[in-house]
Amino acid sequence: MSDPKVNLLGLNRKDLEAFFVELGEKPFRASQVMKWIHHMGCDRFEDMTNLSKALRAKLADVAEIRAPEIVWEGISKDGTRKWVMRMEGGSSIETVFIPDGRRGTLCVSSQIGCALDCSFCSTGKQGFNRNLSTAEIVGQLWNAARSFGPVRIDQERPITNVVFMGMGEPLMNFDNVVRACDLMMDDFGYGISKRRLTVSTAGLVPALDKLGDVTDVSLALSLHAPNDALRDELVPLNKKYPI
Image 1 (cartoon, rainbow, N blue to C red):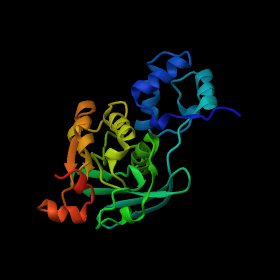
Image 2: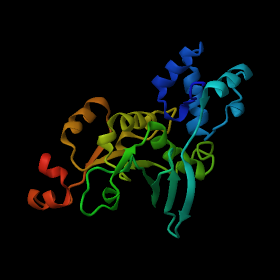
Image 3: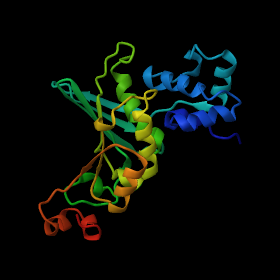
């Protein structure tokens, strides 16, 4: 049985450079391919015309560019968009784009289900299924950007902000979320400013300091209550890590 193909959608620049070195190629190939994938929305190696035919054939043998499948897309009168995307294994998540003047915010999911069971949250009632891979997280942005057309070519950026406020607790999928943030902020990725990339948490305290040590993004703390007594009822995690 052959080894599974590497999904390049989930590799940040450092990982992609290492991938190309293993193939016997120069590290700069990483930035070339990242531009095709993330700037141009390309998912076919044969279309990457600044790569040699031999390299394109080699990539097709060992790698792929695979995003979650869009099974439904809705657009409201105010420009808000919502996608239902099917993940590997058949489970689905939701991703939402919210326009606000010149700002456009994409709300992405980090898990299928959630283990925190906050009383007001429908996702928590589903229970926890699994963490999303880096490719599945970044793939939400890739799909959304692609739905607007080749916007990078026209120097337009309808998606200016990304928030991790969809399904799941991002800090419980720490490594994959950090890698996704790294790729989203990379100029060869999506060039999202660190001030415009927000990770929202219900208060997983041990991961808060760790996040600040490894990446520089904005943090949003979901309080949902003015005091610990009420927050204990609404957010069970607060009993272990009172805010």
